[in-house]
Amino acid sequence: MFQIAILAFSLSTDAFAASVAKGVRFPNMSWLRSAGIALGFGTLEALAPLIGYLLGKQFAGIIEGYDHWLAFIVLGGLGLRMIWRSFHPEAVVASQTTPTWAAVLATALGTSIDATAVGLTLALFGDNIPLTLFVIGIVTFVLTLIGLRIGGLIGERTGRWAELAGGLGLIVIGSNILVSHLTA
Picture: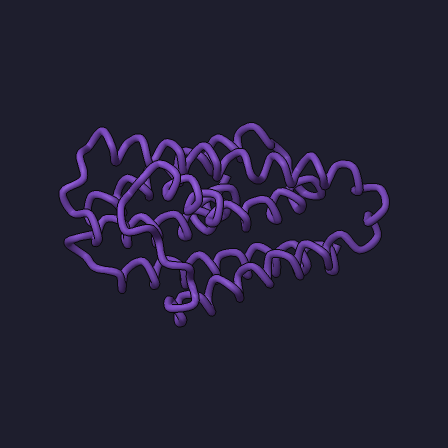
């Protein structure tokens, strides 16, 4: 369960960083609008690894001999990308000037791409996929709601630190998978 929580937090940091930026830009957003945005982010963040999981199940037998290396490379690469983005926020595509639903959907899809790749590794090592997807969705919902509501108070710097922590979390999970298989 601890690994699921770390995974959920790591995947949710993109959504948190994006929601902090939205919260900074739109500090007077209503609770209902914030909850709707958070629900959209949580739903997409939970569905993205499911798509990756289903794709990964199709290829699990083919890559069985080196799946631990694949998980390490995918999670490590995503983690490094998140860390890089935390230090280069100007490289992240800026959000729309108004929080339209189309802009929210585009942002949520963008932050869920990493989760699709992680879903590939869930097909190889996942124990309880429904629980994992549920936790990812709930954690993303909560962090997005928090980010939207307090974004104006805490500023964009905190979102970058959350993304850095999420990247480190993915690297730790990938390293743990690799070490577990190499020492078994």
